[in-house]
Image (cartoon, rainbow, N blue to C red; front, side, top):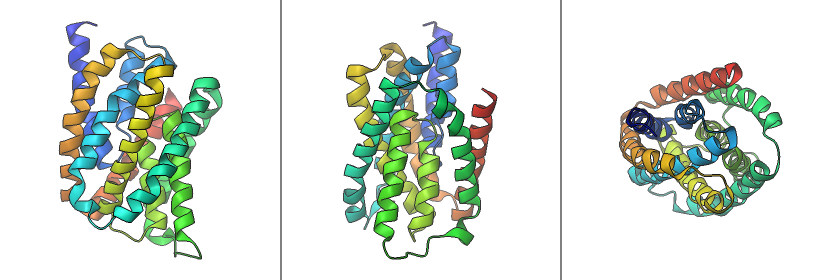
Length: 244
């Protein structure tokens, strides 16, 4: 890897870590970079997932003030997130990507629509908001295990509909979820995936720095500003995927 490529990847990792902490979708910055450097699709996807995992952990640490009082909820979603990630990772490692690549842009456009209409569509609670939360976490875990990029966008859109919480607290919960997915994929892909460890060595530290300071920035953004930032990222990511 040339010095120029190292600088580009490190800069991309800084931005991706911050974007993941604020709104999700930052992996779509680093994934195209890896493909552009010549990595095959699956290798780029796996290496990207491992590279951003430390940034997810840093984002979760930076979000601690907004996790106060959410301990029971965190304990509830962690095992479901792990199960979903295991399912999604198995699909990635043992099946073609073609069908899911086709579906991903439309999932993201749907997430953007959910966020844009959040105030009108907010889930009223029904008979079991707990089940709705667990189902959302499981499905997003499947997505994150299969194609890590922009999973935070989908999760925060879904949780916004089923949880009656300020968006910054939902964003903090999303950071914990992302950290759990990151740890799970690290354990799996390190053993079974075609990882480019030189890429991980460059991107990993960059996402830690970007994720930590991005989480702090997210706490200072107004709720409406954060919501529309997420809508914008989701839409851009979907367009990128449709054109790629």
